[in-house]
Length: 146
Image: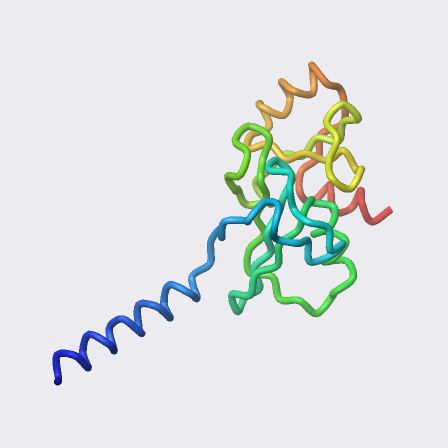
């Protein structure tokens, strides 16, 4: 009986530790909805996730939706911001580390034509081909507030 209780206790502890971890949670493309605009998330290059400091997850279909949500909800305590990126669809990187390209030749779900790249170099290569303007996360936040 003591062994069974230890197994159950260990299982519960591991379950709760795992459920509170911060990190990317797979987006169920075609089923999950954007927390801001309520559209179904289908684009595997532009989706984003916001984790509160308490571990609550909000999913968005595009960076502009996440930024608009952050601009509306001044009280949210952000723990982590993640974005899909151009070079590896469905993979996530921290939004603050990404380089963003706004280019009419790369449409995004909400029409801002905003795409994240893992490195500035990869963004510059695509910029040469597709045109557009590069932004850091901080620059992007200021640009979209206008």
